[in-house]
Length: 525
Ligand code: ACO
Image 1 (cartoon, rainbow, N blue to C red):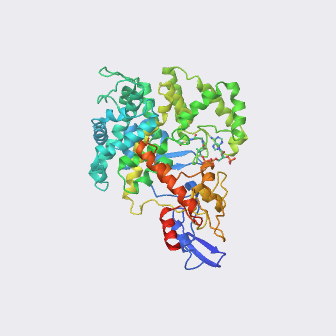
Image 2 (image 1 turned 45 degrees about the vertical axis):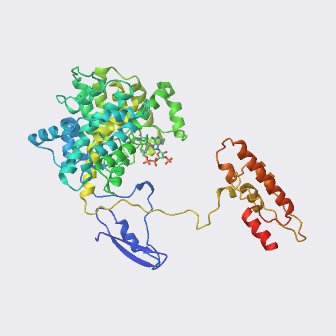
Image 3 (image 1 turned 180 degrees about the vertical axis):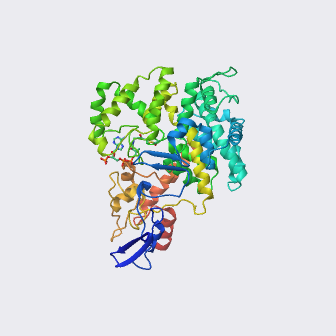
């Protein structure tokens, strides 16, 4: 059986055979399908790219129907059980798990980049008083490009890797600084003696100059959350990273775009939204009423549903187990019972079952972060820290792919056909076009047309212009009012009086403009 697709264009009766590779047809092949020489060719229409493969990739595999997630072929369950975030980070970037010596070297390389650049604190001073931390992180990551101009050499492997290690190493520091700065607490610099997650906890909760001993269960839980969030193939933020990077922007600016994309409540902001939702529900007895509202289209059950997973998100299962370990140390999060009951009810409800809506990674992660005393609006920031590895692996793969071109999708234009510009004042406030006479009034064109017998006819619209609510100020009115000196005022009064006299003495005045008036008088002589 040939791996091809035969298409008959019923507009022309012509038949085309397109190759099928890896279960896809090339959208570019559709361009051959034309009605004539001046036809651009067929384009596939795919809003939100729900059924379009943007690239080939060897990094992450997801089977949404069966709830499978693998990094470089390794099942997420095994990595969650036995690996660490930095090992996974190396795996994502390099394709293979590191031998022990290489992992040590990689860890040293990342640790060497933990410190924020000199002068970075002044940048924080420039933000608003209590800023949203994702906004600060987006700006901070973009600002790094100004400290690392060599990162623009994206095809120089050494420069590229240096920038990648900088981003992975420094992003926890930027994240912790964003939180400490807005809460008015002194910044705690990175501690090289601590692990990657332990150091982050120290920068968040420690005191400057005092040793901080991270609680081992919390340190491990955070590391596990980092493993689970490290990559997730072509999601919204990874797409942003690839799309911006395809213009050959430096990795800092590309990563800033990815952080920005992650901040939305439909993506990385979802775990923050889950906690807000659980707090709003408030008690188990309010769940049925909440579910009824969601089913009626009033809001969404946050932390449920996924573009790719149409069964239980494997990461949510792992997080649910970890939550119990964390709560043993921190005490139970009171919202957990609401979450568990919400999940139980939703998974029995036909609305969610028929749409294959299951808990995603964000349904339980926020509960753990909250139990660890991390502020709710910092949750997306905690997502960005590990996802940096995934973004960079995807970015480098994109750059080195010979098929890569600058991202430039097409559109289906449905707007108006060519039309001529109409100044805004040609329409009234309801958008209706004004008749020509009214337009003249609005614009202050004080036209007075001569009648056949030499008498003035038409209207002197000056008064109407002055009274019109949408009047366009006359040129001299647009000048800011400054008090005139007495002599100036006299001069203007004298000029106005002279004009009035001239007009009264000249019945056939067509326009109020002085130059044209003089021309007219000369030709009348
Ligand atoms: N609650 C209620 N209904 C939902 C939900 C939800 N969480 N998610 C989807 N639906 C419904 C939609 O209303 C739609 O119903 P309809 O067919 O009657 O119109 C149907 O399910 C399909 O929904 P889409 O929006 O088309 O699904 P899509 O794949 O575009 O959306 C998304 C995926 C954005 C994740 C969505 O499920 C959602 O908004 N979930 C809540 C937010 C969330 O948890 N995001 C985190 C995702 S994981 C991550 O980014 C790390």
